[in-house]
Amino acid sequence: MTSRIEILNDGGYRSDGRKQYELRDIVIDLTQKGTADGSATITHGLTEVLVEVFGPREAKVRSQTMHDRALINVEVNIMPFSTGERRKRGRGDKRILELGSTIKSTFEPVVQTSLYPRSEIDVFVHVLQQDGGLLQASINATTLALINAGIPLHDFVCAVTGGVHSTSPLLDLTTLEENDVPHVTVAVLPRTKKVTLVTMETRLHADRFEDIFRLACEAGDVIHKEMKRAVMERAKKLVTAMDMGSRLAPAGAGDGVEKDTMVDDSNDY
Image 1 (cartoon, rainbow, N blue to C red):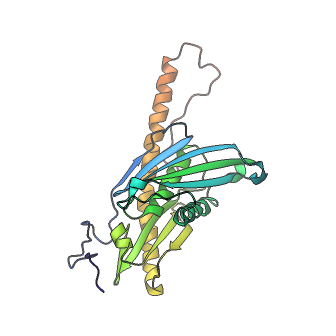
Image 2: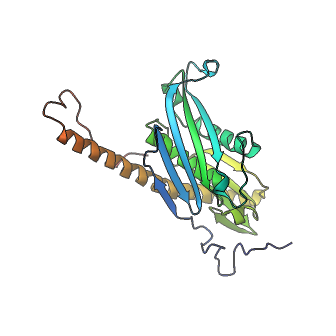
Image 3: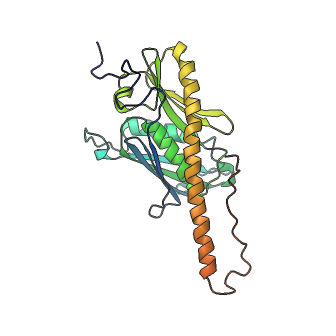
């Protein structure tokens, strides 16, 4: 049975006009949302995810408190209008629980939870629009929201989805492509070159896995540059605002307060 759409035409272009290894446009917004300690909205093409982070704060359920590290809680909310089918998914939906569990296990080795014993970090993932790459967008947005909240990480976590059409590898799949080709999502730590997640929901031939894995790791470096640039721009804006505030403050109001320092662009992250 042939596909109803042309995944990759003879000219090497995909259904949305991209080349095989071309990523979709990435838009990042680190503007503070509501009362969250940190938030981030990321858009991969037509997939848009908002993540809010609260904490570290005192654990609500004392029985779940860990004396040596913080507890990470992840809750996923998929908006009914995020897809064309208008299906409302409850908190007990299997797909939502699996997505939340995957995000949690991805970040537990990366967040420096040992710095916050007997506390919890709550991550709320809101899926605003879906067009493939939902897991990668959720992971990337969570990374940015945690950084925005000032929670120390060992490294950035950059995720991307890859698949194979016939013998041709593809990166950053849309919904139509995910429904038609076997694919894998890889989350990498660009500075340490470690991998914190590899997950497949479909079968992928072993001979093709190595190519996809290598391409996904290289794409992770590209996404890392975009994420780092957004974080640096946000940090510089905050430092500028703080500097202007100190200048407008009454004389003597800043005595005894350490002077703000500019962010160093040479950071290894």
